[in-house]
Length: 288
Image (cartoon, rainbow, N blue to C red; front, side):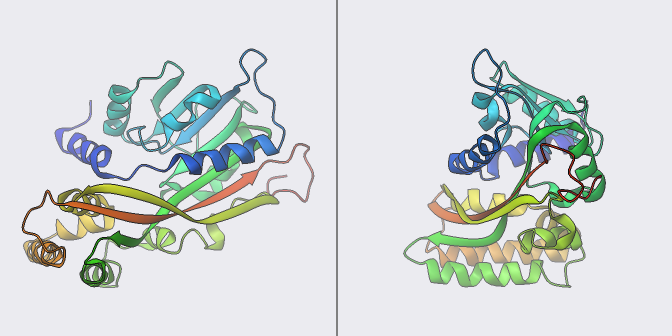
């Protein structure tokens, strides 16, 4: 059983992290359909998808349920799997503890491997080799995340953005020891060569936006749930004091003293797609 501390982190993740828009999953499924993988004969669904780093399941895993006979969500966090299992309302969705680099599925059995907001935490080389093992010929890898480039839909958007930029600049600078190389991969929108999907038939998609309607408190709690933010402000009393001052300034920029004041923002998502060759052609991927 997960500890109380990790359970609370998982619950906050479920409550405050933005959910990806349905359009993103339509893009993924259009790519899956475009390469001609076969659906099950019974109901025009594909046999199996795996959602790697599934977290509590609500952000990404459940969106695949209508398209597959079975969806398997895996995560290394026991607390996240507990949350996902509690949240699960789909008979064809299952959650298991598993590392991404050794998936609990058979060779050539998976049509889609999806990894949302997690690729930067993996051993990319081992993960992509494992994908090549389990994917059917023509199977797809979809890796996506979002930036911290946030656009506020508010009459005082300029003032809010100015305060937020100051916060983000400090938190993503060398002053923050928790802003590691892996975190910077998301800030760079997965453009680094090391994380590219190693199949010739691959593409990237930018400028997809997640619209979030929440409150001032909801936004600040989302931002605090980001690991480089959470670890920094919890590391010492001085950093926590800085955070509290920032929150106060953020509220002032919003023109409110009420944390429950509505706030809408948009956050940019980006997506990498890659397709395993249908035949083992030597030039189509790095794994020969």
